Image (cartoon, rainbow, N blue to C red; front, side, top):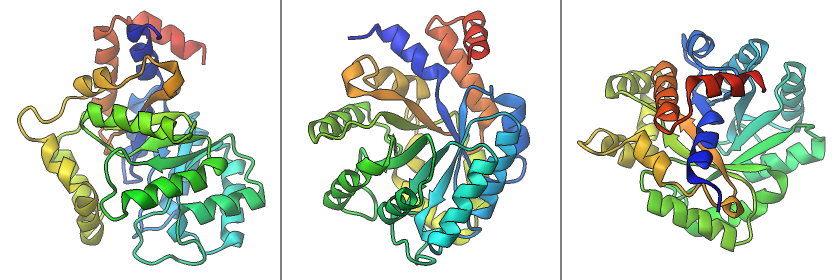
Length: 290
């Protein structure tokens, strides 16, 4: 077993911050986020992949490691996929997070993330990292049996799993154990909300459009309301409850859904590091060695 304090500090020094490609987020990331933190960029079924790829390219040019989401149902065919991969290589992106996406109908030949992953391998994507989704709790639209089978099919094409949000650390830890018992050995990033205000979350929901807001609430409605109940959510309680100190479980760290609250989330992360005994001096040293 690893030292618990050391495991927590290590995970908090290397989170992934998920952002939504909306106006102002590039400036927010550049102003508030250290460059050793990887930024993942979501994709919108209404706006397509262009805002995602554009923001990923601009943040990469600013010196950030970036992982854009590639939504299978937004990509027409292998030719378009090849163009996207070439574009990402050109701007220095080495990591993508592959999802099926929430578009009601596929734009072309890729019904889900499994088909897109196979096509990426056939093309020869040349990336260092390829992520897939994990579900500690049941998917709102897909049965557990299907998600388990899908993970087996996708594992050979991926290098890590990033989980959907779950507030119950008992469920998270049991899910990690079940993944390992099934023989899936990919490292896992545990999904968690950042320091998010109700006001900002409602504002973002309105910006992404009525249809997407409805899908957003269908997908996340359970925890959306739970977050804002008294005593409903604390980032500190969640990070302290996840089994990080068992190297054999390969929990690599946290995938933080910032909902574009990057300033507040980064302030929370730095405060948590200090509460766990990592001084700002240690954090600066860690950044300088990346």
